[in-house]
Length: 343
Ligand SMILES: C[S@@+](CC[C@H](N)C(=O)[O-])C[C@H]1O[C@@H](n2cnc3c(N)ncnc32)[C@H](O)[C@@H]1O
Image 1 (spheres, rainbow, N blue to C red):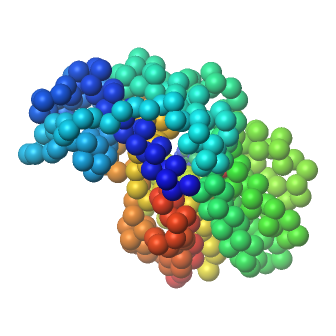
Image 2 (image 1 turned 60 degrees about the vertical axis):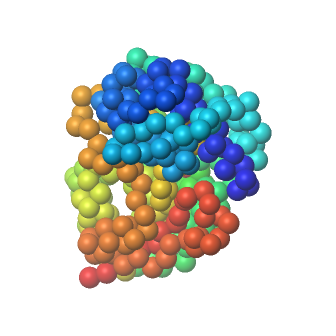
């Protein structure tokens, strides 16, 4: 599995190289800064961070040399072996729809970066958005993280008679589905939320027969109490691959802390570093909307130590980060975090 992961990253690095070469943004034997490369490519300001992350990834892989904040190719640039995508995605446990979807995005990358096309509508053209998001979450690594999250969720004690659970950014409900399986025998009030009604509507259809389920919109950038979540009301908050969307992470963590009872649990999964494969695919969705303020930092994902500090600052104690860095499952760069609210 880890060799498939490495190969997939290599294909994606090849795709970055192909775009930079074909558009003449960074020709062979030329030194350019990130700003000059973005200018030559015609990148929309909101996506400029993506190209800077590409340059960092290519430099880490020694495909680029970096000197005084300028870049040049080092040896032969990697090849975009996109014909490998179906095999690699299959080996990693993704459904068959992933390879053609990624391929389609790759073909459109220069137009996407220039904002001549937008990724969300492009993905919607490929079918049901819930299925598209679900496809991206269906893989061996995310499944293992969701299983581990569900196992810990099943150990959380209810403060009163029933377990109160708030799920943030429930999306395609892969996390929900796994958690509900382990909570089947528990009496619960489980509130599935997302910023998008597409996802809350789909979840409502999927889980309408499940006892104790509630569905509603919730934006993690806004005040939770104003969105109907009372202070100190929850035993457990779940966020599967969601918190990196927070515009103001300390504020969102503070909102989560405020809605948890004393000793309540926050279980969340996150990538802890860029995933080079996703840098030519889904990461374009992390750019701010056109006209909105640009990202404050190019790092979309933060390391476990930074999570520990961010959590502590908002009244959480981080109990566990899983899997350990030495575990083969850690290679995909995803981690499960378990924190509890402390006074
Ligand atoms: C990677 S998906 C989550 C996947 C989900 N755990 C699953 O198993 O399908 C991230 C989700 O976060 C939601 N999201 C993005 N920004 C948000 C925000 N500000 N507040 C709440 N949800 C948000 C998206 O709509 C999306 O459904």
